[in-house]
View 1 (cartoon, rainbow, N blue to C red):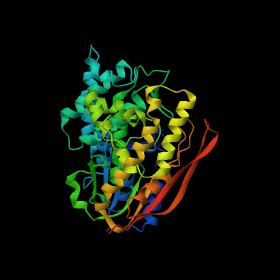
View 2: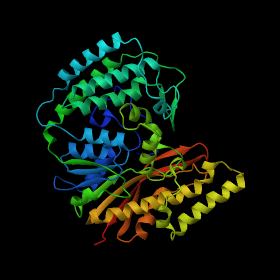
View 3: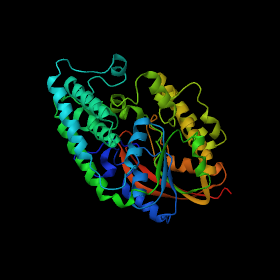
View 4: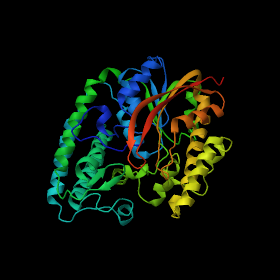
Length: 416
């Protein structure tokens, strides 16, 4: 997940586009580094921040085994579903038509609109979705679940995509918000079944690589689950786009579909999910956080944190989240250090790593050169060396009137 949160248009199609963010981590960039790192069908590629599976899908399409780790339950579900290809021809449409007919009958006969609980409604932005589309979506969701189809996950993923794109009132700029123009009615079922049809076409077009291994682990890349020990010493390369240090709450971007599909039900669920994220913003910092200890001896990061705090004091900024900016920088790079330490047992000697990260200027307009600092962090841990930093693209920050880089930090691991 990168720093640009624009979404795909609903009419776009391909396995990549069933449900994902765009512009942050395009498939062609993955392809470039798969070629650069000379991967083949005997390689193992890891994406430890796999999001909705861009790296893993691209690997599977190219016949390359891969492994992903993702902390968000909804995006883990999306990437796992996108990387689970059944053998033989797919027939998603037959079951989908049966579901559609049942759902339409219930929708037509419903006299009292269905809704979420007060607790669930309290977790989403007000007016995220209008009453009628929400009721129809809940009916369609329940009908899908009642069928218990072998294709159930595909059906739910198609629904998740259009909860956001077609049914909701959400809009996406730098951050998620609610559009002034509300959708009071949408043809929920017809939109959903059209998406299922696209899925069937995509899956049948890629049938030949159904058996290529692509496993997705639900977990925190700073504390890689013990169950993944089978991958020790097996990873040839890493291609990933972790969060950037900024003031964007990544959990908000997927909150609506997470709640409707049951991945989040209350504040405790949300807190557990956010605690599994790298601390990239002030909205997921907790008293017990101690990742900063991993970079306490890196002068450049400590100096950056002090500079941000000094600027806050100079500007007289006293809000709670502004007071956390200096801490976020330490926690972010400390969390990335902890992640790189956790990664060591899994890497082959000579493994190549590509981290897509972006410069930032969101903390009182003080630039954060993420790729350079992350390179320093990696080298401080031993075993890692910076091969180069490739500039992926540039973007103009209007607040500071400066150009900020989005880079690919390329590392080499020779820890053994």
